[in-house]
Length: 427
Image 1: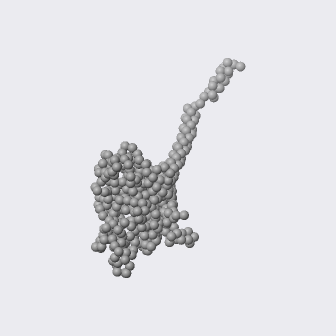
Image 2: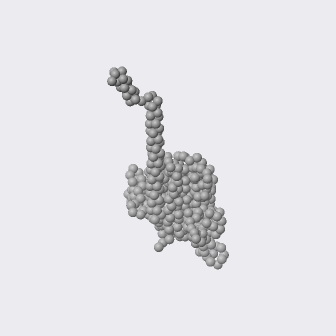
Image 3: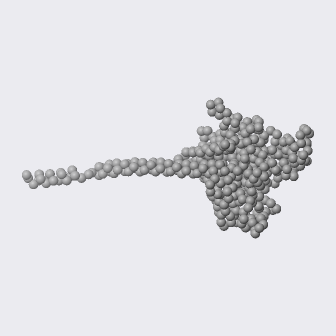
């Protein structure tokens, strides 16, 4: 074969083995598209993992919160049949039903906030391990505690048009005998100056205290049966309301109870159980409410509408019929900054001591009308219940409650709810 032909053949083979610039650009474009698709898939997968992890974490925290609430309710010390007798040494149970309702969340809107102004206040006995609280630089334990469950607005607002809240559980130990200074000196119980209970802005003692002789004294369950001794009505410390019937104080924002949290102290977040809460709805069992399938009995908001106060019912008027203006005044929240009051439906185990405390609580000029041995109302029966100066807001047993806690997860933009029901009927 001639050399020229062999040379041409070699050059032709070499040319076919190379890529043109156009072919390289097309290959690079395809590779970049594939890499972009893979990166996009990884991004979607990462978001899904993040959302799933967020929901798992939220579910875990909500289950832990529900467990704690069940434990507290299981240990309720008070008999849910008003009136309470202080000598029974049984503590108290109080529910304040604010004006908001679960239906307040805007249907079809960005407003997810529902019933966020209910409050639970009660004394409870530990189920298992004792309660632990701060005592000066150390800790102290007790089998009983005064607890408060309530909401206050949080700092993060990832949803336009919706206020998100933190769920608080504040705990104060109940122990009439502490046995340690400054509440016990040698063989003598002492009244501790209120100013010495706080260092900087932080409470030094997680104890349920009352005012006595200008100082703070630890409460017993018998003391806490009396509303004037309950810490959370005036805040987290021994701040007694001015006079009967001891309305609940709020902070300047109108949220209650005032000063009951550890916000603004070096112990901030210790009492926060959940964030991004949009509902803390406490309902009572109403034997007259319409149930499913034509049955009777269900859970409703306390004092939901007008009607009879003879049972815990959605038709119970607020204030209940027969309440004097003075008695009804106790069923309020009072803004500490503006001194404005807002009536709230209240269930309270109350205390019979108001009928023999040596005070004219109803302001009619007669002291302890119902226990003075005199027929003050002229019906021929001395000291009948109609002569009593006071009355529990709802003088009927509380059979059970239902608590709905609802949270918003900003990662997945989903809502989760946990429901806790507890029966107070003794088996």
